[in-house]
Length: 84
Image: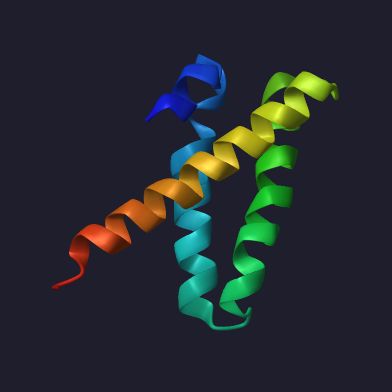
């Protein structure tokens, strides 16, 4: 996954956190599926800001990248589990 080349090492910890949060939102059925990636984007950016302790363009980009990686990883797992 080439996306991981652009994510800083200290931001990688956010990916499994976002995966867990995404599963929790999916299981709760309080949110429509189409809103979960948007919610994860906000959470991912906020977690990255908190982790890096600053707000900058780079921090926001890192938040977007970790969110993209978690959503991508979720989709890969989902597709691999399909029986076709």
